[in-house]
Image 1: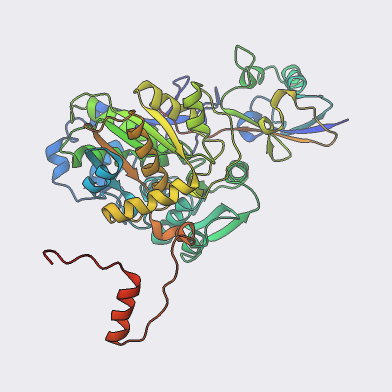
Image 2 (image 1 turned 60 degrees about the vertical axis):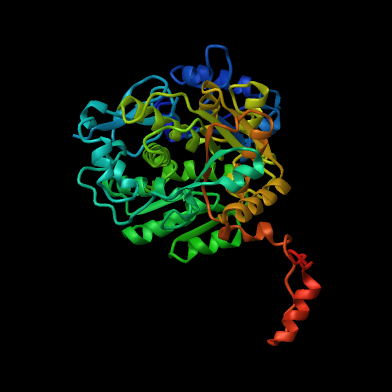
Length: 93
Length: 417
């Protein structure tokens, strides 16, 4: 089984310019572990201290927000395309 | 040097001025911050009152390029006292901030686009773009035409026909996407990565969002440089409510108004209520939803500023409500019949939620409450299509009319008869 992960421009500084990669992660937790290992600089930007997905990072699987698919419990299917997209907020306190 | 620059909301790193919305260090959102001491002498009640009645009278607290000459008079919409509506919903001191008549395209989005395009020019973009639920599309298309930009507009395919036509007419390239707004928005953040365009709500977003503050500045000035007790604001992406709060906070910091905690109330349609659901459940984070509501201008299931909107509401002692589509229609009619203001579905959401908030005691009737009416009813007439029967035509004869009168109306009893 293989899935593809797309890395957005904003994060490529931390992946030595790598824009996508294939791997065989079974779920989001495993995918993050793969990314942590390959790109140690990216690691703190994926999850917070408590291990939760960072607030401003959205994960999509084949154009669908992974939270609609069960989030971390979603089991990747062969050929899934995973997108990491920083969310764009203009917020204020 | 400009008296403002981009700053990361979370880590505080500054980024100067550039088309960017995310901090490269921590991937949190950027916001415009100002050197308030640099504007203190110019930004006074007296000086502001001598300026033209449009949003540019608050220029010191907007991120405008130096020497920028606006090509349009935007904003300074009426703040209407609404005694009849107040009576209908059980309140007493009620005001409407009526952006249904904001120029040039009849929604509050004209304010944010006006600021975004000032920066698009200074950053050297020849094409401007946006993802939109409709009002933003209209405004970007119109102001791009006025200012000589090419425009690419991305919309969900199921948008109201009036909003699509009201974009195409300005010569903008409209791209209909077979998906929800959230999918359109995600696509746009990918396109912004690849094309050197000024996306008003992606890479220009920090500047764009500042334009919303003018709603707050105007409310305060129009109340005689006083802050209201409560503000009811419709929420889509959740930015407007946070920026009205920022505007009030800035006026307090610069001593233009007396310090006061204004309670912020967020309004959503039940069919797309990720923010009000979180507030009611006491959660600080958003769980995204799949929108299903006629209030399509508010149909954002994964609101980018949702987290900050929740904070603005809970920190001020406010609340968030939501109303059904039937209540939206009924509230549009209530506002039109009681105050003569025809708003779009988002305004129906605001009025409907305000009624609930008063009924439930969340808003005290004796306090001063401002409802933000953000868009015009002529753009969403399809929402009312089933509400009125078309009248049968009668012959142009007086006798025909008298007959019509008899059969149509219950004649009132003659007084004293």
